Amino acid sequence: MTGRVHALSGKTVFVEGTEAACCGCLNQECRSCKQIYPAENSESLQLVPGQIVETGVSRRVLLSQGFTGIVLPVLSFAAGFGTVNMATGRENLSILGGFLGLLFTGLWVYLFRRRFPPKGTVRILRALETGTPNSRLSHSADRVILYKNDIPRSF
Image 1: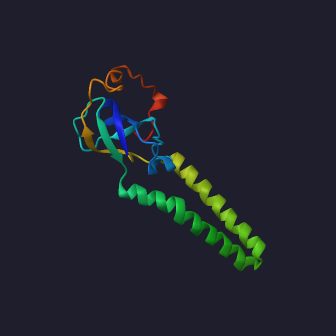
Image 2: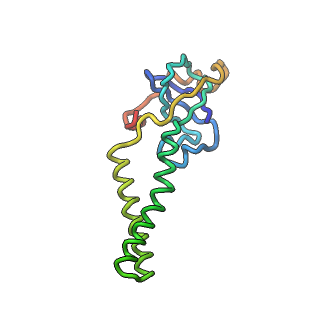
Image 3: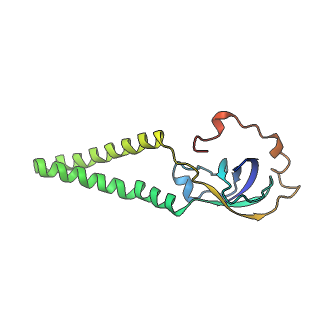
């Protein structure tokens, strides 16, 4: 996903998303649809406000999201269904057991993510072009006010 550098703070770069959506918007990592979001400058690129950059997430994060969003719910439904089916042998109760397995797993993932939020998932991959004086963010970047609640806990 591409974005425009809005402000810099150490290794954290605040980027304004320029695209309508990306795969990261489907989860809780950045929610960067046309918003300002933090990204990690792990490559120590020399960036300036107004510069267009490409952001992304690592393969490990994508695989983790896929497992949490697809594989884990299917396995939890199958485990709940199979457990109740072996105990009772009734199909209606087995389906209910599958949905209870989904509910339990969803609650567990929610509580786990609240306790251990993902860290540093969005990062700067490369700089695409330099900022220009005519860009609407290059002049306002020095006037950005960041409040404590605006910066996610993961950074």
